Length: 353
Image 1 (cartoon, rainbow, N blue to C red):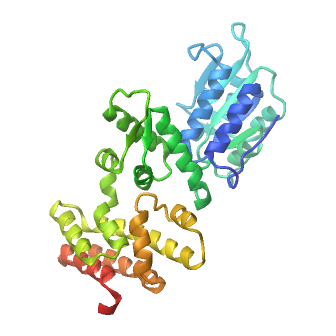
Image 2: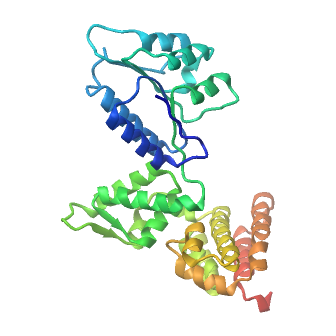
Image 3: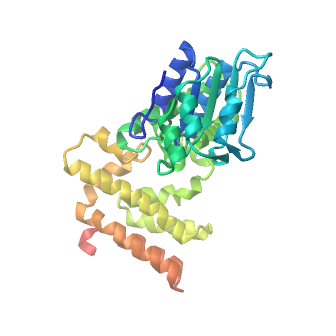
């Protein structure tokens, strides 16, 4: 039995569903390769497969874990083919693809005709198909690709996944809180899981009803939220409020935030504005615009900004931001003054430009 999830196929959540359905029927013997950048779902699939094949992980006769030291393909296949008197199955896990050397032929031959009770699991988050060995791994036996969401059409599935993860911890995320967490953590579900664990501990023992997490709590507790370089400034840019934008910039500077990092936060919000404006002018529905620009937690400011900025003004923003980024890196000017000038230039009414 062989199946594959190509890099252009379903994202990691769908690949995990496929893996769990196969586990329920009985995992096929032979070579299994787990690859992709969605390590959260990859780890869960790996755990499910091993739990099914080796219920007692301490059984050294049934399970061998290799990869701490270099190993050849011949030695790896030899370990998978070996049988013992004290275990019904032989399971070998290669935990680090970087430890594997040699020609691909032994792996291909094993994948084509494995012993009935032999299972070789290869964990390979990154596969370089330009290398013969990696190409053979991707095309032999069972290969599951756990790909992180990379396009707007999958953000809805990502948001649903985060909501389910929160529910497992007795939490209910307000839309703005969920959007904020996604904005900070991106599609790194392992990091999101860690932040949800923190919110669950902060919330304390719950009741039968899920504890609702609002934006303020998420903003106060999520690690790295400062990397947004000030949600107040970003919202002021989005809604084109020059007074609040300058005031927010000064508060960030007074707090010791680095101007170049603040510019990075502005660039992220400017990109969202540009995407939203282009889609709006093309007639896209509001929900699609919000999802594509990932504006779940600042949708009110976005609605205001789309009325106050023209598309040409938004198209000019990346160039202005890039110029300031270079200025901050290459000139010995007052960086605070440079930032204030940028914020004023970006947000002041078009009649004053």
